Amino acid sequence: MPLAAVIESPPATAAFDPAMFDFWVDSPVMGPIKTRVLRARDGNTQRVAYVLDGMRAQQDLSGWEINTNIAEVLADWNINVVMPVGGESSFYADWAAPSSFFGLAPGAGSAAYGTGSGATEAMGGGPGKSYRYAWEDFLTNHLRWELRNRLGFNPYRNGVFGLSMGGSAALALAAYHPDFFSYAGSYSGYLNISAPGMREAIRAAMLDAGGYNVDSMAPPWGPQWLRMDPFVFAPTLIANNTRMWISAGSGAPMPDDLNIPLGAAADRLVRGAPLEALALANTRAFQVRMLTLGAQNIVWDFPATGLHAWTNWQADAYRMIPDMSANIG
Image (cartoon, rainbow, N blue to C red; front, side, top):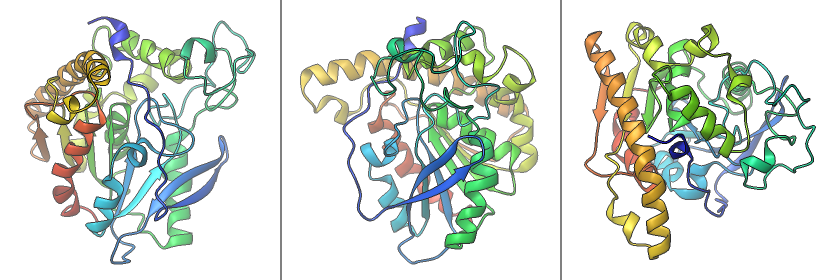
């Protein structure tokens, strides 16, 4: 598997949903952070789902809002939707240091953030470079309680799910904050990040997605890195009795992946098939680990088709939402 294969597809053009609203909360480390919120249709405040983005998370809207209708579907299921915005390449973790290279101060380069090229952005400033990423702290110690204080949202037994980096992050948040999250979903997640070659694969992905340095996130093979690895903290998820939905596609295209212009379909297939194959291998390894430990608290979902693409993740969410609805609040 070539390391470049972990590069995710470019984001689509943003689309704004007027039913949602911006919810700003200050992070002591990262500054003001925007979250997009959509209220449950019935007005309840007890049922809440946190929806995590992928590696190329943008600073304006969540990829879920840009590329899918999942927020609206969740609201129709009477679930309040919380979509943190930003965190490109962050894994929603608390990083060891701001992202930098060669000992140079973050932001020392002249490249502007948002060029779309990791090579040109690596030495520039921007999110996670001009400051240290502290996403776990923000989500669990700041956003959680501001949602309770200002909107009345229940801070206990919430759901959390995400794609790719957001999938492994969802499992980590549930493992270490079991009172906060009773449900976690991973779609096409990298759930065995300490496997041979995976750190370098993640290094390549983070370089491409905004020019981030994996060594700034966590030193190699130390406690901070192992704490992020679902394969390692699997027993904690079992002990917590966290309800989980774990999914990965086969790498074969769905019909909607082909019902687009030929060039776009070819690009999606070339990029999305190897990425999903890597995610599938990671997810299957995690499955073996959990089954070996006797896990009974997981729904395994391995559809016959699905690329590393929003078509797959939207379909994943459609299948998962009824199960999550029954296990939160």
